[in-house]
Image (tube, each protein chain N blue to C red):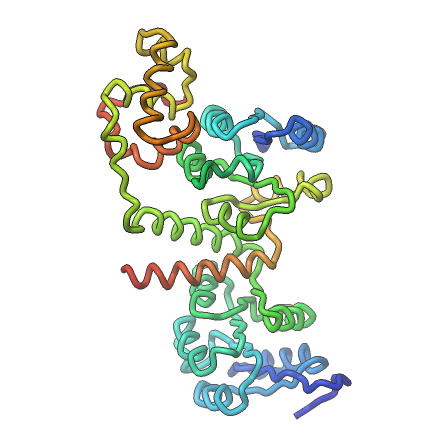
Length: 238
Length: 150
């Protein structure tokens, strides 16, 4: 195995798995300086090398015969959890990218990636970080937001019926306030004095155990949708 | 091309002014409103429907709840960029989980704000790679959780 890095520490082993000779050659050229490189060209060989050679990283061509596409990454990762996988794709795609990262890969990039960048990607994942194209990051964030929201909704003990405690009149005020209306606007809308609005608000804060208008607005947005009175009162913005 | 509309939601006047001064000379970016409180941020986002909301991280949280889901509900097309000041990764990550599309520490605002606004408006995120790793770790955790409850 080549060891021409000149470092005193033993170099990390990087496995390159692809049936494409040219791709394997480019990977070797990119990594030869800093790493030991071992090439495999089909799945059985890859599985054996994962177990026997214990590579620090694996550059995995998603087109590898027998891999079964991005879904196959899970099985390969299972063979050795400590190996950091960088998936190489022929056609970068956000769904594929998210799928392979969820499968445990630490990197996802175009097969045609420039050699210097490939070396950098390998350095980065071996440091424990993730390597993905900039275009994929907003999709990861979107996925994160969706799952966070889903968890927030489904988490047990989150249901809150405190809004049931307020009177219909108070409920109107809650809806107007959460739509951004001021006390003055609420008073005008409901044909009462501002003082009355303030008195209602004090009662609402007490009943719901909230400290102020913003807390109330957020509370109403979070909990109030399903029980919002039909016909909708209060100004909707524009 | 219509300009990128921006609302600045910062507690401190000096910070609002700083953002305004950085963005005003920029071609294709127009500051359409300012907010000083969380409620004002929601109200003006709902009224003005800006493409970008610059949001003080301190305003993004109200007694343990995040303001960002409410903002997204009131103005779904508005993308939120957080302005932070030495904030912990955990706090920033939490805000990203709730839907912010990037964050910028005040120490680098003068260098990157216009670019961050354009990049986020174009649909990309403005986060350092270190944070991408945290995002992925959190995502893996949530995915495992979703798998269990499915």
